[in-house]
Structure formats: C-alpha cells, structure tokens
Length: 384
Image 1: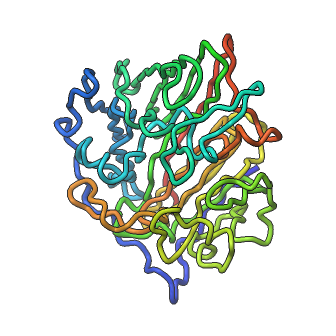
Image 2: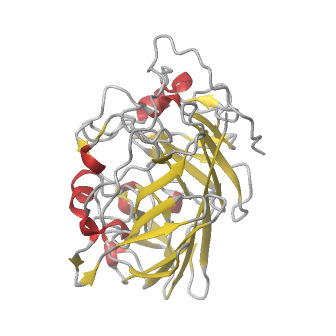
C-alpha cells in the first residue's frame, strides 16, 4: 500500500518551471452568481464549515464545488479549487469543473455499449465519443438540495429513462460531509428501475498552491497503482500496462515535472481531440492496488511552497489523473483570474473510461433491486 512519506521541499528546478509563489488572496464567491431559475428549478450556493476554518461552497447546479478554502502550513486559508463567479461563466469556460459527473464519468467510445445483446447509442458530445454523461449530463442539471447542518449537504437528481440514451429511471443521491479533521467526504447512492450502467464521480480541479498562476507541475504526486490504461485518442486500448519504467510510475512521491516532459507516445496521446496544445500530458486511468469496493488510500499530492497535502481515499477501482492539458489560458475564473495551461489537475475516482466495452474490467452495470454506493474522501493536511 501507499507509504505516506514527507516529500522534500527543496528541489532543484534548473531549466524547468519556477517554484510556486505564496498563495494569492482568495476571492469569496458570492451566492448571487449561483441564484437562478433553470429548468423551472431554483439554484443556490451552499456553504459548509468546520471548526478548523475550512470552508466549502457547493451549488446545486451540477452539484458543483466552486470554492474550497484550506489552510497552508502557516494557517493561512487559500482556495485550492478551480471555479467561477457565476453559473454562466462556468458553462462558458469549463462546465465540468467541480461538478458531479454522470451517468457516466469520462468517455465511452462512439457513445455505444452492448448489454444483454442490445446495442445502446448514447449522445455524442466529444469528438466521436460520449463524455461525462452527454450533452446535458448531471453537470448541467439542477439537483434538489437540502442542507442538513453546517457540515452536510445532500443533493438528489432523477435521470429519466432514455435521457442521453441511457436506459432506466435512475435516482442519484450525493451527500457532501465536511469533517473537523479537514476531510471532504462525498458519498454516492443510486438505484434504477431498468438495467443500466452508472459511473459517478466529481470533477474538482485542484491547485494546492491556491494560486492558479502557478503551474501544477511542481506538485509531488503518489498514486497507489502498479498499472495504468494506455489510450488511443483518449479511449483505453483495453490493456492494463505496468507503470514500471514509464512516466506513469507514481508509486513513490514524484514531482510531476520530472515525468511529464518525457518523450513518450502515451503522454502525446494526452493531447485533446480538438485544438490540441503543443504538449500532451496525463489524461489516463490508473488501476488502484486494492479491491473494488474497499475504501483505501488511492493518491497523495503535496505542494512544497504552501505545505498543503491532499490525500484521496476511495472505494472506486481507479483514479483518472488529468494534468490540465487542454486549459487554453483564456478561461476567466473567480475574481477575473486567468486559468492557464496546467494550472489545475483533476483526480477522478471512478471506473475507467469505456469500461462497459471492457468485459474483464470491474462492471458498471446496475440492476433493479441493487444499490450502487461509492465513497470518495479528500483529506487535507500540511507537511514541512
């Protein structure tokens, strides 16, 4: 299992991006930017707090995490997630950011899968493929919301039979809980009235320096995984390849910059389908070294300037690590800050892309009478 070892803060960076600067003052996102009536339903912004001063702001539009204030090693709060001042800005620039992703997180090749001998055609919204639940997946939906207390928010949505091509009326309940030990817990529960597929996750984008002008390449990453899924045009090939001897080996704490500039075909595959940048990067799944359904430590990320540490625990079988390869440098985020190339990373706890078409991978099928349950925890701390 993953060994939690403090990462060295003094690193030689000759010829590579400069060390991060101190956290920039955070911008407090106002509720007014998230109070709308969409599809006849009221949207709002909800705030969770704990005794340590940590703050999380979540909208019931897409279940989006839009602000996450976390202390650095000196106790100074900084906003460590990508987000936008208004719903409209989020939809304009990056609608997945911070959102609940479903019914299926990430890509399904050609939007097709076969179940019980029947071919299902999902909506196409990412080149030739289906991405993040389709044209109006959960990231564009208004959830019913109930704030249970200062620490807990529950949101619910029912996907209609045939919505985006998926079979079954499928209900989803997501509960966000902020604990006093600086952990944000997300629990997903889902049932269906017809056999279907599900793969729910959250698309929070992180920069632990709390300053999007700093590249994420100086973050130190550890992923408890011995294999990853190679891709062809961002669709898994079906292979589970060893990370040993490749730039996908994060089994020990490793600075992203030490691997991401490697000349490697799979890193080149990390370019986006539309308007790819000059460089590729990570947009791949790692199969975790644990049993599916077991809650375990999947990844650890350390940012040396702030001292912030993020540990990700999940019951899901894989982590999808995306290194911000497609951020164009024109997205205008909170307070007018520009989100540039590699200014944020995501680690989606999930079943890998295209799993419905890979019979040897953990199943994503949900039957009537069954309940899908998953838990992911983002635990924050600091190190020297």
